[in-house]
Image (cartoon, rainbow, N blue to C red; front, side, top):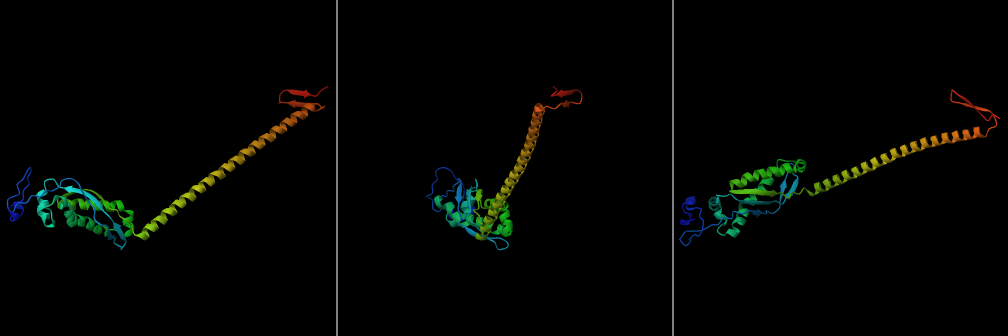
Length: 233
């Protein structure tokens, strides 16, 4: 910046290499172009039906290449003369507020239940909005996480519901195992009955043959074609 910036943006220009800043009214500003991390304080947001959530967002961003003059000119009132605090000052004065406002305003488009059931869609809308907002402020939003937490009562309700689902699944599995065991018992009983029936028939057949072998009477056994006489003296 030259001439104390009296002519507005016309007194700003981008420079490279060694610069002389001894001239009256000359100030050298350095805009970091590498990725930065923002970490606003956690805030409360409210759904359309007054459900209360907490967000603790973090984000990464960096200055738009070629927009250093715009950044210095538009934000020098927040203190950007020192590069080590420049981005901190811009975050606190501008970017953090953009993030917080986006979460608060987008939450009003949801009821408590719909927000819980559509968290991904909610966060995508917030991120999409903030990408455009950051671009207008000469920055690129690289990444955003919400750290969103539901109300304590809803968290307990969700936990209770999940526990109920798990218990129902456990009972279902136990019933399926019991049914399978019952079916197995029926099959085993039927198999035992069949085996017992087969054994009884065999025993009877053996006893019958033994009786024929030991009889003194004439016994005729026929296969339907050839008669055979046993026990004949």
